[in-house]
Length: 174
Image (cartoon, rainbow, N blue to C red; front, side, top):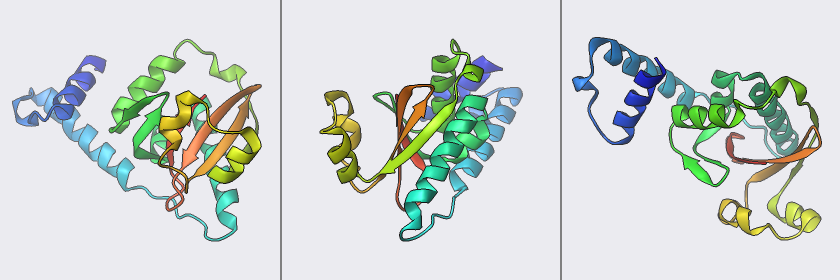
């Protein structure tokens, strides 16, 4: 099943038609296409005005909680694409899921806990933490109007970037 999923993803990513697939793989493609479309259609109604920061904090906590639980449907519904993860950009939900599962497969997620989340504008983040390090400049260069959630996960920092218009997560870095 995993290899069929990767075949479907590879073919789609490289512009191949699904018509050449076997009946079983065609069914997998149709399932993938419908679930991806459903994920991309889901929208969280963002709060307006001053409540947007608290909304960004709630979405960030929900995203991280589901990440620690491996709830991929929920994680992907809270993400917007293209998604930036650790210096790479992912255009499709299945590609992001595969990358994240690979990264997290060696970690005991049950041992991690979210100890706190603070949300900042770009200017507030720069004022509090100084200019961004070199490895994050690419991520931050065109997202000055986004929300930045800095989470403490068992003593380690994680940064989530959220679109202000949808409050969907567009980037993650730890």
